[in-house]
Amino acid sequence: MPNKMDVKGAAEITNKSDNIIIIHRDTTTEDPELQELVKIHVAKVRDGGEPGFIDLTYNKEKCNYEEI
Image (cartoon, rainbow, N blue to C red):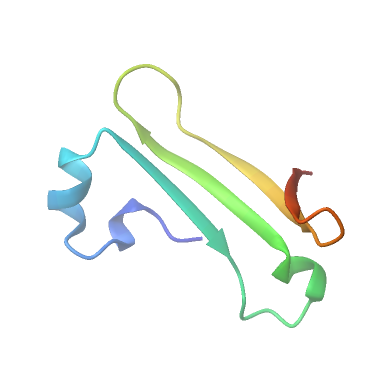
């Protein structure tokens, strides 16, 4: 899972940002279930709120993401 320091020019960009949200899907895995897994990482929240993670999976029939 990438983090906020993986962004090119990370220190300059992340220090100036109010919020940082990272959306990651592992497309290198051979497991089809893991390929549909999407991780959302709220890495920085400047004014209120807490950083955190949520895992979603893509529902092909409904064409949307669902919390797992």
